[in-house]
Length: 211
Image 1 (cartoon, rainbow, N blue to C red):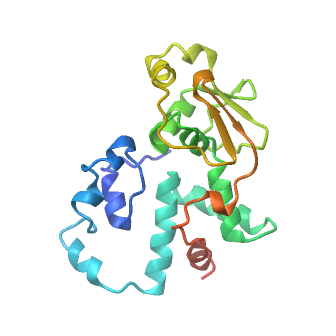
Image 2 (image 1 turned 90 degrees about the vertical axis):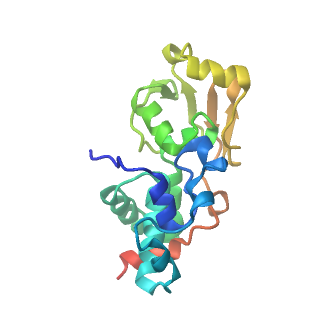
């Protein structure tokens, strides 16, 4: 699969908001949004002053969410089609599907400083779900699932530091529970819209794909 290899801080500047793609750097004064909050490129400041059209707003919202969760357009369309076939609000269902990705859950539990790092940890086989190794970042978790660091990965310095320092990059939402000392987490319930970033306007995404 193709990978985005350019500086990820450009993505935050393009969307005009923090996407939290660089872990601890996003919380420091070095964050690109803190230093230069204009779109990248030589005409970025000029573009920032223009009033966006309805299509631009829809496109930017779709791109923002896609980049937050680190999925490519083909994957994102597949999630949207799945949400469209499911009962309920399409936009909310789309966000719930993205939240239930294993890499996002690892990030939410605080085992990684960013979703990109969480995705790498998952694909390298460092986690188990209900005792079975899962190395698919898009794996959809279910209520009752127990996510743990694999036994042969617990001796790695990275995970030892998590236990010793009790370090946590993000407080887990109410639908998740974490035991950092045991390097494990549990899915308590399905995520709801209230558990997801309130700044996301999912209706714009629905409008974009409904054109």
